[in-house]
Image (cartoon, rainbow, N blue to C red):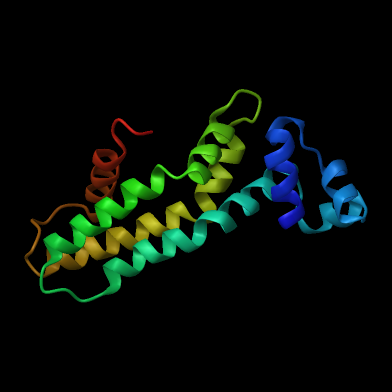
Length: 155
């Protein structure tokens, strides 16, 4: 993962190859393909590893029982906005949305971590609805509205 991250950073996604990564490792492409079925899958794993810790810290904000859920949501929102502005995440977004990469990479990246995270956030929203803190609405839809509000003008 470290060697792949270095190659992607040095060469960029388009120019990086499984051959250059395996050469850096001193192994074979066949071995590398044994772990990752494509360059896209390897890139997705590298990017998710880099971003996972920050994402987990944000989700932990919502696990804490709070007397003030509005303050909790505000703290989460501020942390999320800072997170989506990090160079690592911006590089991932640029790479997955650039021409030539295709939609499969974006879907693969989303399925690895963000989808799970937004499902957890929807669970938090649902608990707030059940407690009467928020009005009742479809939790996942409510969560995606929050996501849209937080990302507007940034992404």
